[in-house]
Image (cartoon, rainbow, N blue to C red):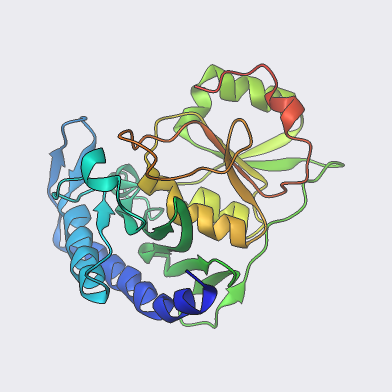
Length: 274
């Protein structure tokens, strides 16, 4: 799949993400209901409204490409997925707990996966009127409200100063704490949902380490944006994440790196990868 094909897809997929975000805000204003999924994680009627919007629109865009969504009721077993070469990978509302806490840091994530790699990624933060997007070979971009898109780039690691690290609840895990102690002087910043990765991509954060449980739909769109901005989203062996490789859709621990050229390997030496 070449950059010209991806560029042609981008405007419609970008609009789908914007419209799905609008549906979330509409449900939030009207009042949403909360349910508990089988894994005891929360899901709301806002998640389901965004899923419905995205699913119907992507299906109309290309009926031959399957859609794997966090809220997808269709069969998504490995037997079903193993033949997929190109497919959509979607988190209709990343940061449901942020929504429940009345935070605005939740996102709509849409990625196109081709040969196990994300080649197009859209992340919209509807309550912040903010959109990030990228496609393979097309660079990474940020749009605030009605302003023109701005190209974004990750930044070199500040070896002579204090780095800024994205904080999530996973930072309570011992391996992340050990890694951060090795990192040296750093400032921790609490950011919700996929906005952590987006802020690494735009150069306002240096690093996001994650050991907590995440799924493939949590990282795919962000990975495309980070990579096109000059950074990396890698496992703790410093290998890029790959998608749809087996039955399990749970990611390994990963790092979002703004500066791939920094000497990360010594900081990870001896740390558990699980």
